[in-house]
Length: 369
Image 1 (cartoon, helix red, strand yellow):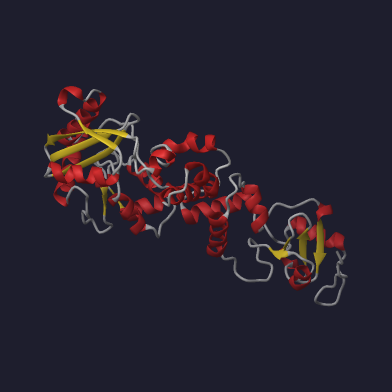
Image 2 (image 1 turned 180 degrees about the vertical axis):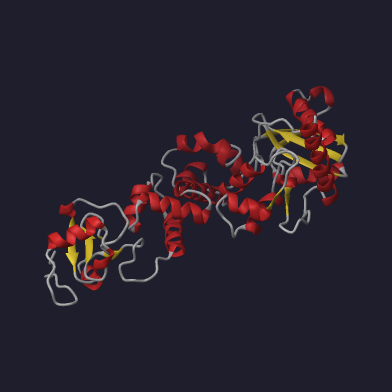
């Protein structure tokens, strides 16, 4: 590598030792006088860059960004040594594009930081603030999406899992319950091989369908007609083995149903039921916040978006609430519009209104008693 002789823009020479002292002090008065380039990462920075300092022997200096780039280095995205305003949106976009096309399973923050010229801590914080999930969670969600696409397109399980970026089948099957809600083979067959047992009972809000696998509750729906509720369940799991149980056959399902009926009737907090649902990383974050809303309280869609670190994703939060497969257990009815309007609800606005009123009475009674 040929390194040009260093000259300050004023014409006075700056010795490398002086440059290094400026870098150690993050002295912004030297910004524009030179840039420091790291041999191992091939990234160059301004002297005041807040990134962690490398070892002295790994750093060379150039008068200008053009000279650094001519020598094969690229600009740091964090301090932007060319003087442009740092663009966090561009950084996040480039990270997403890299993760979208990256099939290697083990992508670490250190690797990403090195690639994009920012510290791992800064990268993690910036990405999570913009996307609501960490780079690791985003990459995992993209692998799941690639897997689902492959399975839906007819690929065999082995081919789909390796094409999606899973290093081994064991890693996939370890997480299948939380990522797919079923085994990959069952997902490929639209739920074929799954056994879902359900019942439909009367409640104070009309007919209530509760469906469950051996892992937990997978569907809770409210409506007026059994046929409509059954049609929704069949659409969600078109190839699953679905069986309607009578009262004497329900076993543990009957206890879960009773807990939900008690909540509907009294407004008191329902039991934290085990769930077996398929959700994206974004939906999972939304549902986690929903389950933390206290009985008798509400939050707006905007509140939820801010809490998950995605303040502009209000519409996406509303869509996640609309797609909630397990009403009551994930209390999407506790989310309203910012102007106080009650908003929509899968079970109907009137049911939402009654649920909120019942919960408010129960909370008030508990506080006064």
